[in-house]
Image (cartoon, rainbow, N blue to C red):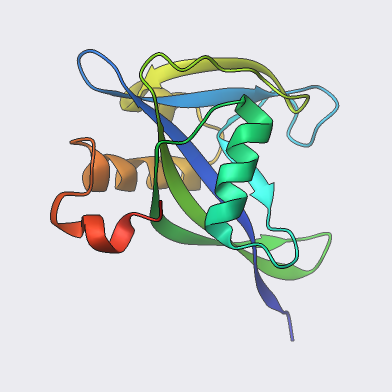
Length: 154
């Protein structure tokens, strides 16, 4: 039987911009997996770490950004061929300050803030476009409205 494991997080970094929200997309460095692909933050949950703590840590490590508000959006299952296991990623939306400055880590070579529609076109993974659509529907006004009490993690 193939095991399943909640082992990773995906973090969509979002900021308020005129006239609406923008999301951060980053290009993978040549020496990394999926070299040249545009993605969002993706990281492994360390032993004993909660997914929301991983989201904050990975955001800091990969972008140098401080998360002001964090929302749990969905879970995403995918098969990891090399490990022969189903991984489940917890997907988060991390809101940062409107003028936050990105400091890229070694995993990425470029970063751009894009409106949701442009980011969806740029992202390599179809599941990332689905997550982005969910984020826009749930948090498009800048918060979760009546769902704030169940979606807001920090």
